[in-house]
Image (tube, rainbow, N blue to C red):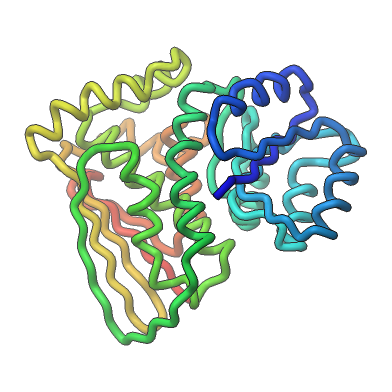
Length: 298
């Protein structure tokens, strides 16, 4: 089964780089768009064929006449896109909220670290294929609880995030499901990186800039997994709300400086938690931050 990926950016040189990089992946139909006219021509074609875009990769700052947000709105309105990745520089809070409400699945900052970006794409493709093949099942319950413990592995984050919300697919709209997965992925990532592996927010920012985050993650994870310092996720479902508890084996992060910068959107760490705070109805911490409790109502 092939995966259709659409890459939209007004920077033609970036489109060319992306095209060369994605050409090495198997079973991928990859297309780039860099102008308004190209987008509207493409939109006319897929409206007729009803060909779903499996992964949309887009910069929110596209052209003067057409923004990335407008493109996402058009494709979502016509139900022509599945998974959305936004690549951009600094995103203002109001824009971030709007993108979350539109059901954006992942955010990457420019300049793009292509090694980590392609690594992420490779991890989500099996999940997208599974979603395409899986039919929805109606589940009725008054109470349900499940628990899972996972090793510190980047490949575990998305599958477990989808596992957390699988009971909600017939209750909540797809955009809400997608945003919950984004929030859960952020917290599970933090539990691994900052909790179990001890990567500080400052270290993470430096490693991202140097393009070494993934390699450092794997190096530390190999040690920590041998020590059996895992991440535990508990989910509880009631008639009109759900609770997710994510707990790591770290020392926590809630010292005075961390509390001060908890939702500081100028940092990677604060921006992620601010996004989670928007997505979920309730967000709280216990055990100095090593235990995170998320609540969603419907």
